[in-house]
Structures are given as C-alpha cells and as structure tokens.
Amino acid sequence: MTVEPLGPGSLHWETAGEYRNLLVGGSALVLQTMHPAVGAAVARHSAFRDDPWGRLVRTLASAQTWVYGGEAGPAEGARLRELHRRFAGVDERGRPYHALSGEAWAWVHLSLFERYVTLNRLFGVPYGPDGERRLYAESRRIGGILRVPEREMPADVEAFWRYFDGMVTGRLEAHPTAFEVLALLRSTPPPPGLPAPLRHLWAPVGVGWGEFAWFVTVGTLPPAVRERLGLRWSARDERRLRHLGRAVAAITPRLPERLRYMPRACRARRAARQP
Image 1 (cartoon, one colour):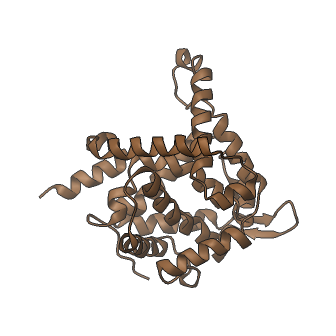
Image 2 (tube, one colour; image 1 turned 30 degrees about the horizontal axis):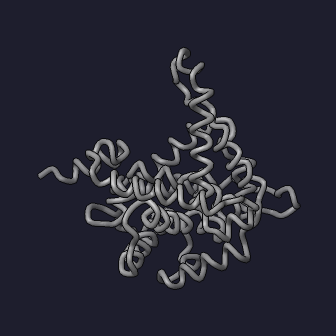
C-alpha cells in the first residue's frame, strides 16, 4: 500500500515536533502500557528501565520521522514492524502476547491521537470538531505508514471516540508496567553524558523534575484512567494544571522556531520554506 507522507499544511506538521509534546509523553506511555499485550511486551523487551533517556530520544526520533521524514516515513514504519516482530511471549498471568497483534499495535498508535487532542485542549488551542476530523484523518495516514491493519482503525473521529471509551472501560487494566512507568517518572536518573560535576547536582534537580513529570502525567490522563489506576487528583491539582496550561498556551506561539520545535522538525520546516 502506498501512503502519501504528511507535509507542510498538515496539522501534524504544526504540532508533532513541538517541545510541548513532552508534557503528554509520560501519559501516552502509561495509556499504552495499560493494554495487557503492550504492557507485557514493554516489560520484557523495552529498555525503558535501564536507559529511559535513550528510549525517549529514539522514540522522539522515530515519531518525528513519520511526520517530517518525507519518503523516509514508510521505511521507518517498516523498520518498527520488523523490530517488534520478535516481541512475543506469555505474560505474568499466563496470557500469550505479541507486540504486532492488530489490536495492540493499533492501540499504541491510535492512543497518540487522543494525546494530541488532550495536549491542545490543556496546553494550547483546543481543536474544534472540524479540526479533530482533520487531525484524525491524518492519524489514519500515519497508521498506514506504521502498517496498522485497516480493520483496527475506526473509520472516522466519531467512531474513534466510541473505540477509545470502549478501550478505557473494557480493555485497559491497571498493569504493573504502567505503575513502573509512573515510578520511573518520579525518580528520573541523570541524563547520560551529563558532566561529572553536574551529576552531583542532579539529585535535587531530579527530585523536582520527577515531581513535575509525575504531576503532569497524572493530570493529563483521562479521569476514568486515573480512577482505574487508583491515582489521587484533587481540585487543587486541577487548578494548578489549568494555570500551567494557560501559561504554556500563551508562551508557545511567541517562541522562536528553534526553541519551539525539536531539531528534526525545525530542520524540516526550514527546508520546506526554501524556494
């Protein structure tokens, strides 16, 4: 199947490479690992415990290739499929799993659409109905790049929200891997390559960053997911998140491109403007 890459003018082109996506990165991984097959595959085959920073860098590089890589996007999708082909086994409850099972592979991708909607609702300008339809149509194109089975992708955005609600209430679970992700966010190790003198200073910085990452991750999860995981969230927490969201929404459009977008996205956007 030939998939036309996304490019300038698409909603993903404007959003996918922004640094503010990091605000929903943790909650995306929590949502994904609440699917039993995904949670088992990540627990057994991912480097998220031993190399969280490396995993983050690789994930961001891959995701930006889908949007900003042009013809390299489908090749990256094929590489990911091949990489995950061997991620199979039996989980702690005796259930067989495979990372490339249609439902699991689709959930990893489709949950990102919901995260983009949440990102712009909390930290930007919310999409209206037409914007959501357009963004979802683009998400289906990215699903083609990742070779998500057509049968697993709801046909339109209205069907997506029914699908998402059904997954939250009937398929996701309080998986141990999701709790591991939350714990890791709260105790983030120092970035690799940090100079030795600065590594001694990471402890207080890491505590502050970890508490912020945990707060934003829990706060951006759907309320039904927080309830499923038994995570406490108060009215005061919600007010703090809303204040943060308004600040991010006000500052982001005023940032120069090199501070607003990650390097891959910044280079692609500049190249697209060249005559």
